[in-house]
Amino acid sequence: MQTEATPGQADVSELDLVKRCQAGDSGAFDQLVTRYRTRVFAMIYNMVHNEQDAWDLAQDSFVKAWKSIGRFRGKSSFYTWIYRIVMNVTIDWLRKRQIKAGGAEFDDSIQLKEIEPSSKTVPKADPLPHQRMERSEVRARIDKAIAQLSPEHRAVILMKEIEEMQYHEIAESLGCSIGTVMSRLFYARKKLQSTLRDIYENV
Amino acid sequence: MKTFEEKWTAWLDGQLSGRELIEFQSSLPDLAAAEAEKRDAHKLGAFLKKEAGSHALTNEEFFSHQLRERIAAETRTQSRGGLRSTWWTVPRLVWSGATALALFVVCAFVIMTQQQPGEQSEYLTQILKTQVDPGANPNATISIFESKNDNKVTVLWTEGLQTLPADYAAK
Image (cartoon, rainbow over all chains, first blue to last red; front, side, top):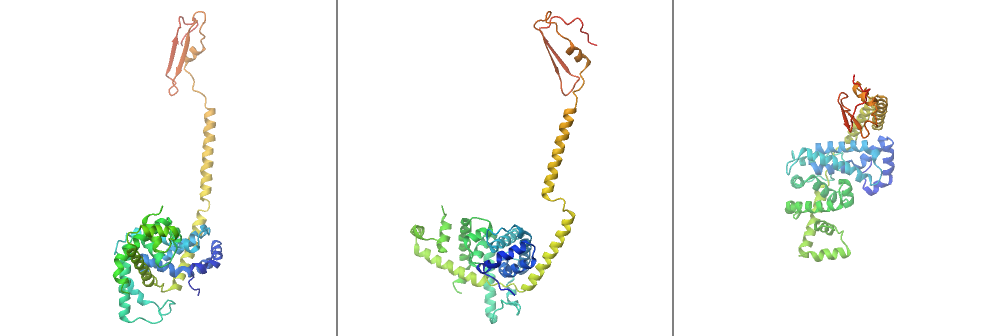
C-alpha cells in the first residue's frame, strides 16, 4: 500500500498519474486517491464533524474529481485542485444543511476510540480510559468551537493550521483572493482564541 | 493597500519583513500585548494541529473499493446515456440551430421577393392611368396614398386640378 504523500513528495509522479487519468486509466486515479484519501477525509471531518457525512462527501469529491480530471491543466498542483473540489462539495453541503453554531447532529468523537487494530494510524499504545475521556472532551470542545465558524472561516483555519497550506494555496482552493484568506484567518483565529483559550492554555 | 487584518495575519505568520514589518510594529499601540497575542495564536495553531489533525479514515481500503465501484457505475451510466444522446452534443445543437435559422432566412427572402403587390382597385387604376392635361391644369399635382394594410382604403389628394380629363370615367 502506498503511503500518504506530502505535496512535495507527490509532485514527482503526480503529473504522470494525472495524465494517465486523463487518458482514462482508473488505476492511476486509484493511486491518487490512495495518496490523498486520509487528508481529504480528515479535512472534511473537521468541517462537518460527522464521520458518515465526511465519508460520503469525500467519496463525492473524488467522483467529481474523476469526472473533471480532463479539465485539469496543471496550472496549480493536483493537491490544490482536489482541495478546491473538496471545499466546493463540503461548503455547498454545509450551506444546504444550514448547520448552525453547535448544531452538529451528534457527537462523533466517540468513534475515535474505535479505530480498527489493523489501521495504519492506530496509536502505538492505547491511552488510559481517563485520557481517552479527556481527549474526547477536548475534541468535542474543538468541534463545537469550529462549528461556530462559517464554512469559509472553517476551511481557512483548518487549511492553514492543520494542513499548513500557504495563503496562495488556500486562496486557489477556495477561489478567493489572498487578502480574503488573511482576513478570514484573522477572524477565525480571534474566535477560536476566545472560545478555546481555557483548554489550550492548560494542555 | 493591506487592511489591518491582513497585516496582522501576515505579521502573526511571520510573513512581514523589512520596512513593512517595522511600519506595522510601530503602528501597534502596545507591542508587548501584541506579541503575547501572537504567542497565544501560535499555541492555538499547535493545539489544533495536535488535537484536530489526527482524525483517521478507519477503513481506507474499503473507501477505495467503494469509490472504484462508484466510478465504474458512473462510467457505465455515462456510456449508456452517451449512446442514447451521442448526436445531441452541444456543438451539434449549435450547428443545428444555426442551420435552421439560415434556412428560415432564405425561405423568408424567397417568399418575400416572389410575393406580388396586391391588385389595385379599379378606381385607383383608372386614376393612375389618367394623364393630367398640362394645358388645362398647368400646376396640378395628384398624389395617391394607398393603405398598405388594407387595399380597400385609398386617399386621392389633388391640388391645382381645374378640370378632369374628358375621357375620365370611373367604372
